[in-house]
Length: 273
Image (cartoon, rainbow, N blue to C red; front, side, top):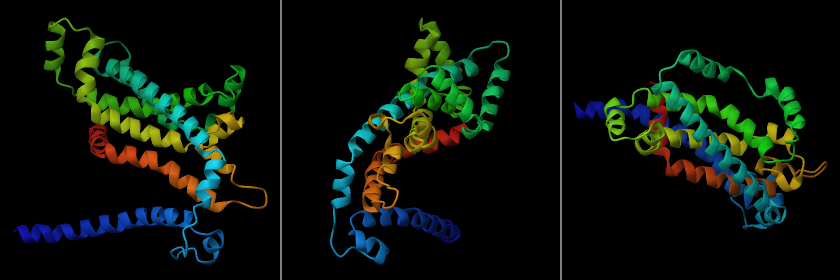
């Protein structure tokens, strides 16, 4: 019986193996191509490099890659932190507090998924210009938080709605306030949801290009996606520097996902309830 069960699992294992290869092969090519000499990048794109050329990494570093990474870290960390804070408080209120219209509010938040950035880019830019937020971190952080809240509230709501009432009642009997219950009881037990929101939003914001292109024109404030454009000229593009930059800037998100992958999967499973 056990042999039959294992045999039935083989197609699933083969599918996952093939899917992993599809994902890992481009990443492997990216790293290998970043250390190739420029000529071999086009004449022998799929072969191993004859010599390791680290010039692309050096040119990327000298071109301001560290500055772009620092800007992305500031924008991403601030946006994710505010999204977790505001989304957690809103979801807790919608899930645990009884007030008129809470289901209507939650439905409106779910409906916000249907509003794409491209559809409101022009009025959004007019608002940013009106409040003089162009070429500022807040000009990116505030829209990122706004667009990230529907997902964050949905994930947190799925966790908070089925949270054990006994634990919360015991905390109230001990004199704990609602914010105290949220911070001391709910948050420690909701780490899968927190990790899911942090990883999902972190990757989205780290790679966002369109809004950053519209809002930021000052080279000192450009994020990583905008910084990569600097290595492309009108007639010549430094592709080895671009590939080197992509390799370096992919590391933080990969580390973040590998470190919290279990919590991420548990959080997504909880959001489907």
